[in-house]
Length: 365
Image 1 (cartoon, helix red, strand yellow):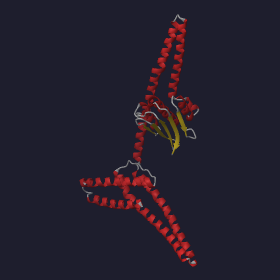
Image 2 (cartoon, helix red, strand yellow):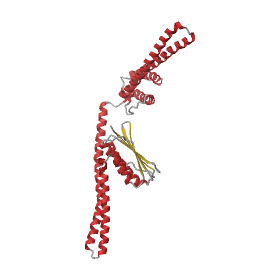
Image 3 (spheres, helix red, strand yellow):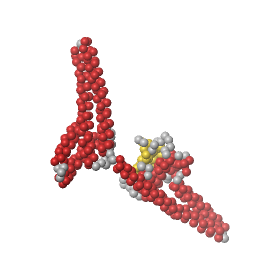
Image 4 (cartoon, helix red, strand yellow):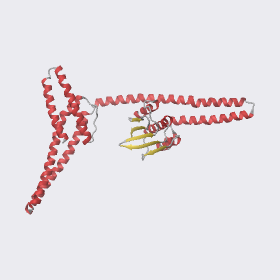
């Protein structure tokens, strides 16, 4: 009924707009003056139509459309509204026609009229069945018309896609360069410094004439070598975990949980192994989010959840720390670029005082 009532408004608005534009079609300035409120009104009515389609038909259309597209949509849509009103009226007539004869048959209780009443009732129910099919067909046409008239044109869609691919490619290159710089910084500030200290300790031990002092220096060198190996293993793990190739995503995430200094619960809801590019991005999202939480938020627990919803893999990392995470920071910004490279989306919610929720959605077959 909402669609039928909107059709009447759209028909009257289309006729009125057409008459007004016809009167000023030969004069550019008056035509622009008339066209401006007409297009504004068309957009407002179209937004109401989009809300109706979203509520009643669960149809979501693109909010990016031009005012002229809205006017063209309303000029075509009123006919569908009238058709829907006719279908609804037919349903009411069929239902009323069939049930009224059954009601009269119960009142009259005449055996001779039984056949006529049954046949008439069946005809009314058949008409009702046809009208239900008509309602479904009108609803499908509504969706096709909205997607056709309000959606981006093919050329615009191609241009938008090319722009997205160009931006994501540049973002991937920047992310790789940032990762290389971070690896170089980790090697220089961590492993290299420990190896320098190790060499100095061994040199002092070789030059020492005191056996006890030499033994003490060798013990320190042994400890320094162990720490250097731990740092090197940490850098290698951050570059790419071998567990991801050997045992899969679940084992890699469980390893991240075991290596964290706070309790991390992994809720793995996938029945199979995702594609390797998707699994790699999911791993780095979880690893970076857990590392940032432990380093900056001082949480008491972290929950990692992986699930497949409506054809997309959804990963969320939530901690009960103090919040205030900066989504534009180097770590999270690099994650956003990794996710965008696979046509995904990363969202960070971290109000002051917490909790912090990092969510990523990735297309997944």
